[in-house]
Image 1 (cartoon, rainbow over the protein chains, first blue to last red):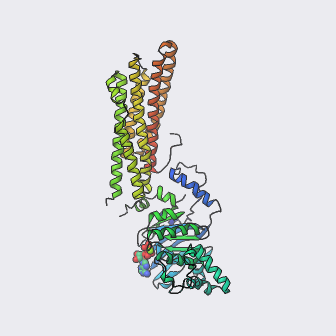
Image 2: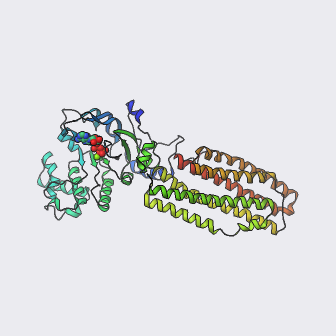
Amino acid sequence: MIQSDAAASRQHQPVPVELKSPVNHSSRVANPLAAVAQRAIDARLSSGETTTELKVRDFSAWYGDFQALHNLELDIPKNRVTALIGPSGCGKSTFLRWINRMNDLVASARCSGTLEAGGTNVLDRALDVVELRRRVGMVFQKPNPFPKSIYDNVAFGPRLHYRLKKRELDALVEKSLRDAALWDEVKDRLDKSALGLSGGQQQRLCIARTIALSPEVLLMDEPCSALDPKATRRVEDLIAELRNNFTIIIVTHNMQQAARVSDVTAFFFEGRLIEIDETLTIFTSPKNPQTEEYVTGRFG
Amino acid sequence: MTLELDRELATLRAALRAMAESAQTRLATALEAWMTWDIDLAQSIRTADDEIDQLEVNIENECMAILAKHSPVASDLRYVVAALRINTSFERIADLARSVAKRVIRLDRDDQHPTPPQALETMGEAVKEMLSNTMRALENRDVELARFVRKSDAFVDDRNREVFEWVAESTHKEPARAEAFISVLMIARSLERIGDICANIAEDIMFAVGGSIVRHTPA
Ligand SMILES: Nc1ncnc2c1ncn2[C@@H]1O[C@H](COP(=O)(O)OP(=O)(O)O)[C@@H](O)[C@H]1O
Ligand SMILES: [Mg+2]
């Protein structure tokens, strides 16, 4: 359990998040809630070693003269859910948008440092960003299905990236919709417009559309903030299902959601990474007083 | 910024303080009854204790309401979890004080007024001191004082052992009064357990304030 702080950032130290706590000989023993939950986490993680999906070193980002991110140092573990929390404007979306180079579309945006996804230098000018965005998919706050049929929404990406026979495409669409926990609700209306779906269904469709391309990373920027509690719960359940096969990075303003869905939580404040640790630690015994203030709602 | 949660936590703190004070009063009363053979005093805390029971239930409900309504995290969560444990601890202290009072009444009824060893008197004073330090540590979130409470437990344990030796020796000398001596031993045992419970509360305070678990580590 290691936290990142300003000092660590300055030294450009990698910030490993040890998900599987080894036997802890230090005086700081996990708290009782943590102990119970730790067993669950250990069970969940024992299936495989944790490896790093996203390596971030001395990463800074600007919009013109304004520095939005300062010397980020962190590792995001593969096939885990990492939650990014922090007050509005602290740079969470900026960070996400650099991971799949969405910021290429913002003229004033530039950055420095290292950002590697699965060993690939994301910031490489020569990188094929279309391929990058297949590997690093994004789900937005407001569900944004294309004004096409449900089927075509999911088939759109695969048609662009792969040459598939009709039968193969059908199978891929079905699998993606199943994986997004939407199949049963839409299987009889695949040719109907996606815009006729409820908000929660649209969001799951957007997730289906993204996972149809077999990405390694799923970026989710407040994916539930436009959804009602029931639809939110379904998306959260879906995240729990997907966590084994995808590296998920989710921005959320809902502390309980971060606590429920994520394995690792990173707290950002004013463009800096203040603390990153196991989610349970962040919500039971955060080390940094600013994190404590933020998660307990006493901020500001 | 005043949060609804802060208001409810303040209410919880006050209720826990009231609980602690009730337990403290009972301990002091039981010890005084024992030292002075004041049977009326002993009777006053003998009967089942509605006030403490009610407080205990209220505090538990308060904790559950806070958990359900606010889903507290970090230090708030730790405080509520600790409060649930501390609540039970104070209730047990009050119980033990009552069993001391019952012993006093029984001894008096059997016309037995053994002169207790000095160690037992010292023990009573030490346990009272531990309890008041515990309450102060809780009130002021004083981890150092909590640590000290934890350490004080060994002193009480040592006196308990002396009482045991005294009882063994006295019983050997005057076997006819064995029952009375055993009552002395039981009183010491109650006090020793109150010391243990204070140490437990101290550990809960350390957890609530600092987030670390010291429960299964040496003092
Ligand atoms: N396109 C942009 N041009 C200029 N400034 C921007 C742009 N996007 C975001 N910012 C600024 O960068 C900072 C971080 O924004 P953002 O990453 O959206 O924060 P968050 O997602 O944490 O709310 C904010 O101060 C915001 O005003
Ligand atoms: Mg944002």
